[in-house]
Amino acid sequence: MQSLACALIVEDDPALRRMVAAYLKAMGITTIEAPDGRTALRELSDKVPDVICLDLMLPEVSGFDLCEHIRRVPKLRDVPVLIMSARGFPEDRAAAEEVGASAYLIKPFTRAQFAGHIDALLRR
Image (cartoon, rainbow, N blue to C red; front, side, top):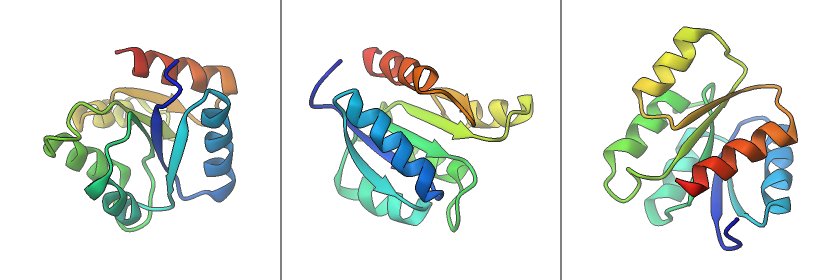
């Protein structure tokens, strides 16, 4: 695992955001946190993380819209996006793939499931 990797966590639930940050830090990955889509857009205007952990149900700018934006911006286009969502229906997963998600993880998830997805995304 790269020790200098950086992840953007976009999650409106503070407890889940802290948990994901702790998982990433344990993997040697630095984190940037955003509680909503608008804050994430600001962070992405001047930073290019190695991976983005993105909730779908966000205030102001949805995870779907944010992922679509990421795929339209040349400097962000190839950044892997891990969707973290409680929405487990096949149509939700299909919609996430349609807007460019790299992987989809259904909440609640274990530390091992999360780490496996991140590790795979960073190796691409």
